[in-house]
Amino acid sequence: MTKYRSFVVKGETMAVEVIGTGSAVPSTRITNDELAKQKSIETNDEWIRSHTGIGARHIADENTASSDLALEAAKHAIAMAAEKSGESIESVVESLDIIVLGTATSDFIGFPSTACIVQGKLGAVNAGAFDVSAGCTAFVYGLETAAALLSANKNRKRALVIGSEVLSKIVNWEDRSTCVLFGDGAGAVVIEKTDAPSEGPARRGIMRSILAADGTGTEHLLMRKGGTKDPFKKGEVLDMPPCLEMNGQAVYNFAVRVLTKTIEDMLREEGITIDDLSRIIPHQANARIVQAAARRLHIPEDKFFLNIEEYANTSAASIPIALDELNRRGELKRGDVIMTLGFGAGLTYGGNLIVW
Image (cartoon, rainbow, N blue to C red; front, side):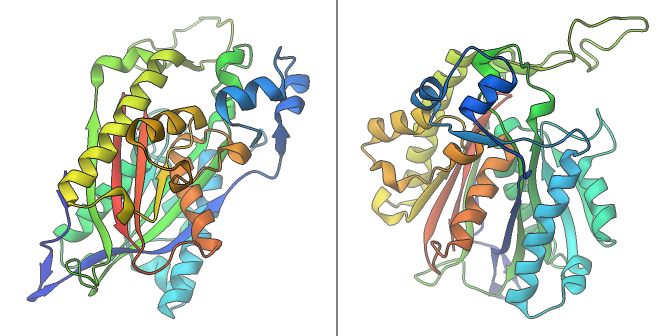
């Protein structure tokens, strides 16, 4: 766990704040019934909705990669940051010190990082860039990492944090238990070191993060083929392209357990209650997971923000897409305390506590 309460520059306590949000989803929207028909899947809208809360998903075309969606989301976040700061878009891009991109569907296997591709297309010549591989928790990990890097060096001011996925290209469309769950999209935030107080009633910014993992569960959610554990071999013929594999029940049980644990730990360590939270923004994996956690902790379901009905599970992109949607709808006010929650492949989990 990390708290950003003790960051001091020249005797002044500083904060790391979100100053811009953005998102991007493909224009092609496919409902549950359309998906069943197009992919010849034996399922229907009623079954998918009742088991997951999903009603539709946005699917990228064959020419769209994660970096393309990430770039679009980043531009929206940068434009908002420029408007808020009174600077030009070019100035904000030039001021970026770090770009952190969370993804499970990088443009290339291993390298180069998708973050570097985005950095090059943005023209962010002063920014270091790297990817974070933490499954659906990657945005939570990335936000913590970027904030820590800003806090660690007085000369760093701004960072761009992105979650971007094109999961439609790695799902097994013959496995109806998994293929109906996922969609494509990207979300991004610009964070900045400011002179806002990080303590007291007027505190602002990223207050605390929890990063955790249970590596004993790696087999429950993975891409088995193509890495150094099981590389492609010369002359090898595959029955189907490499795709994600998931033990749905094991992941569900893990998610409910760690979701409740993270909420309890975050509240206890920060010394606040559920009533102090304006919103909880969970990873949009399955509405039933959130509902189960809410029941266990006796939290009103409307405290959680869910948009899974429209976008399905977009993995590392789900939290920043939801954050951007709330922000652009004007539902995040200055001083609101919000909590992000992630859980996914690794198995990983964690959260961020942010004062807006």
